[in-house]
Image 1 (cartoon, rainbow, N blue to C red):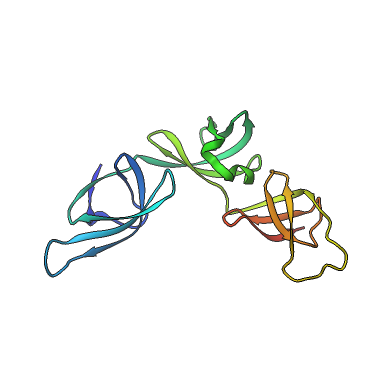
Image 2 (image 1 turned 120 degrees about the vertical axis):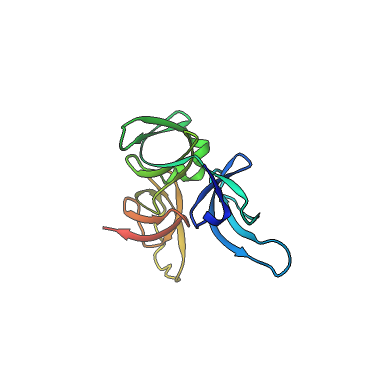
Length: 187
């Protein structure tokens, strides 16, 4: 479906140069001399890169054929991660390379948002926080009480995060998956 620049709004998904984008922000500009235009900041939904783009007022763009689906991570199968659609129960393999580093922050039965473009999964959004058990971590040294001192800890998912010295192996912690940082200990 073709849209013109007067229908732009934040979050609108459009297709440019064969790629899906979402509009992060836009501004209609009417200079004293010359034609009006729309200045936008758009984000590529496939690779996550943001770019600035200017459209002439009234210029037509196509709406992107994208769909968000709630899915649940089931298991790793070779080089693919298997996800289940929570409404239709269809199982879909997605290459681990497409998920990237987020694969280390996925536990079985975790709900994720998967973006489908033209019927194919293109982007995956994991939850902002993960609760995981520490599978390996060195003990803190007695008397080492300097503030803000951390040590590496390996989670059950394979991810390595920096944790405070008082955290022990076998404890459950909450990690912010956006920053890859320790948040708190979970009882």
